[in-house]
Amino acid sequence: MNPATALRLHHFEPLSLANGPGRRAVLWLQGCTLACPGCFNPQTHPLEGGQQIAITDLLQELLLLRPTLDGLTISGGEPLLQLPALTNLLQALHRQTPLSVLLFSGFTWTQIQAMPGSPALLAEIDVLLAGPYQAKQRLAHGLLGSANKTVHLLSSRYQLTDLQATPPAEVCIDETGQIVLSGIDPLTWNDHEL
Image 1: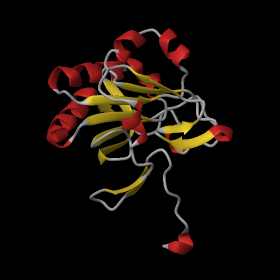
Image 2: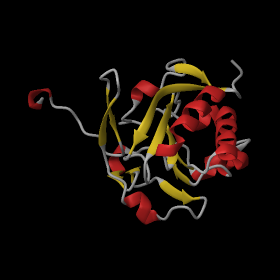
Image 3: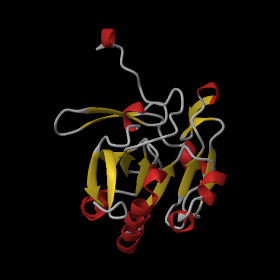
Image 4: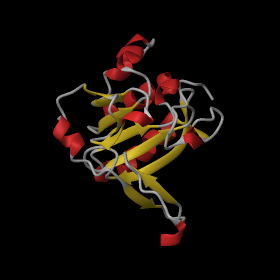
């Protein structure tokens, strides 16, 4: 598939309350070259993992869910490794819906601004959380994994208080019984407590 028309997806969550303000769908994109020590999602790092999905198919899925959603959150992996297709998806989404967009990136704000194509992507995002996870500065509050991360409110849609009010964790169970731990401070399982 053309890298501008398909995304490599690790997981799609149709409804989350712990990945940004309100009721949100979440895309965890596959592939990350940053390898931050202590990353909660190391299974998203292999560039060839996950599955390729056409942005038209993802868009149709989001349009079906639209009546139940306030927005879309994109995480990873590192979403900006798939910047052209991600930009195309968000532009198409905004042509057809008023959904908000929140994006997590391990790149710093300065690095993101220097990326070719970033102005078009940033124009489609309401909130950007930028910077690598640093375990020694672990925060796990207000959607910030570590204290070095920066918050960029790129539209007037949300305030910092909206991010701080987001629950820190949730457990999602899909129709197949798969359990997904999600949020900025996901729960850890203790086999002795189950």
